[in-house]
Amino acid sequence: MATKIYTKTGDKGKTSLIGGTKVPKSHDRIEAYGTVDELNSHIGLVGDLLAAAPEADSASALLREIQDRLFTIGSSLACDPEKEPKLKIPDLKEADVQLLEQAMDDMNDQIPPMKAFILPGGHPAISSLHIARCVCRRAERRVVALEEVDPLVLQYLNRLSDYLFVLARFTAEKWGIPEVPWKPRV
Image (tube, rainbow, N blue to C red; front, side, top):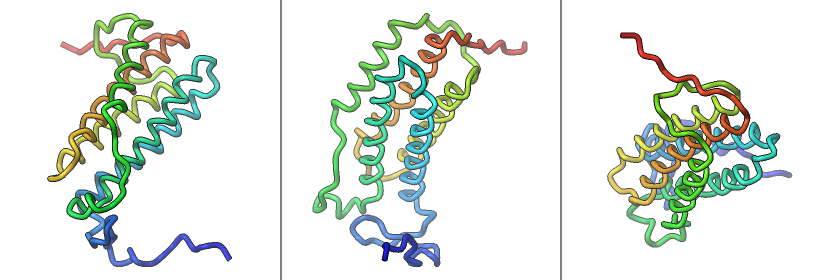
């Protein structure tokens, strides 16, 4: 018989952090890693939407790498900070941040400079990238609210939201979809 997915342990609004500490499901840590999990799902959707494009090979591979790093971040956030040093939790590396920066630099070399704010949209893949960027910013805000967090997690999430923005612009450029500049009413 297959293992049941439900345990009924959360029926009263509590859950356990890695390490066994029980917390309410509304705890800041649960909000943070739940938002990172939501972001990971949006990244999966973006990867699926971009997969049909010929230029998507490198973006799709990096998006899978990002999803792996988001699981790493989720593991760190789901861990009781007092017990984490004793547990074997995967860690982010400075190279993970550098990978995003290099990818952005490569894409920025192939797109025109931005001269105005742009409205998100133009294609479902581009809109989905902007949604993922917004969810990433929310995840970053949730993580900032935590008292104990690896500074590299914040740096990675900050850089990731920038990467998603640049990837949206790059995708629009490669697919010939014009960006719509924001024209504020004055």
